[in-house]
Length: 95
Image 1 (tube, rainbow, N blue to C red):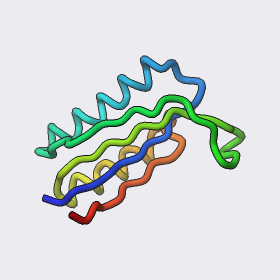
Image 2 (cartoon, one colour; image 1 turned 180 degrees about the vertical axis):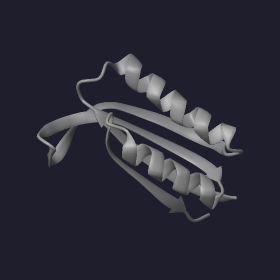
Image 3 (tube, helix red, strand yellow; image 1 turned 135 degrees about the vertical axis):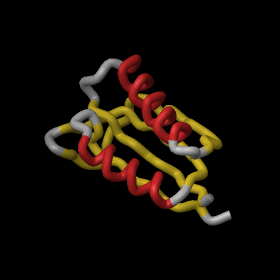
Image 4 (cartoon, rainbow, N blue to C red; image 1 turned 45 degrees about the vertical axis):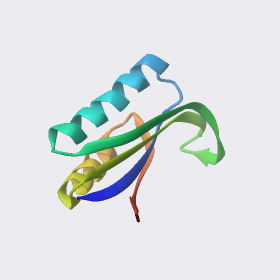
């Protein structure tokens, strides 16, 4: 198992409850695929440093988890297809 950090930026026009539900759904995908969530940090709505797709703000969430490479590629592919996700980044943590 490898350690990863996932940062997801959701659209600004979503309700905060919907964003929290989407984060919970990502956490469920991780645990369903034998991953272990070590930390979840919901930052809330933040302003972007630069405009992305005519948007200037979005909801940030950071999830740290342990999982295999297949889980990482599945998350990357799935989050890339969601319209509610503005950007996402998965980084491998070195321990």
